[in-house]
Length: 229
Image (cartoon, rainbow, N blue to C red; front, side, top):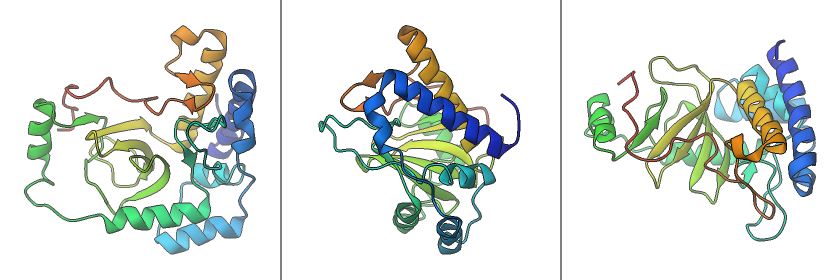
C-alpha cells in the first residue's frame, strides 16, 4: 500500500470496515462519525501538542468508537473497549499526565534493563516504561487498565508518534506500529487474514466482545531486552 498518510488512513479504514463486515458485522455500529476540524484543533490546543496528520485524518473518518459494555453482546470493532473521541482524548491524556510521579530510582535505563533481564517488565520495542509521561497522548483503553498511546518521546530508535500499548498492571509496553496509519494498515491486514484463514491471523475474535486486547503484544514477561537498552 502506497500514498500519503491521509490516503493510507482512508484506504485502511475502508479495508477495516470491509473486514469487520465479514468477521464481526455487529461491531460496525460502534464506529463513530467524523470529527469536525474544530474538534481536532481543540485537542491540540488543550494538550499543547500537534497531532500527526495521519491521526487527524483518522479522526476525520471516525471520531473514535462508542464504548461497549463487556458481555452486552455488542462487540467492539477494535482490540480495546473503545478508541476515544476528541473530548475523551483530552480527558484521558490529562488524567495520564496527572499520574506522573518522577522516581529517580526507577526512571533509569540501567534499572529498566535489569528489570527486563529479570522478567519483571516486558518491553517490546523502543519505548520508555514511564507511567504518566508528558510526551504521550492517550487514544483508547480496555477496562481502564490497558491503554493505547501516541508516543512523542520514544526511546532511541523509535519514531515520534509511534503507537504503544501499555498494560501497567502487567508491566508490559509494546510498540504496535511506528505510526497511526501503519497501525490501521496492520489491523486491516489481520482482519483480512482472519477472514481468509483464522488460524494464521494474530487476531482472536469473540463474537460477543470483539478482538482480544492482546493483539500486537509479546507473549509475556521474560522477553529479550530491547536493543536500545
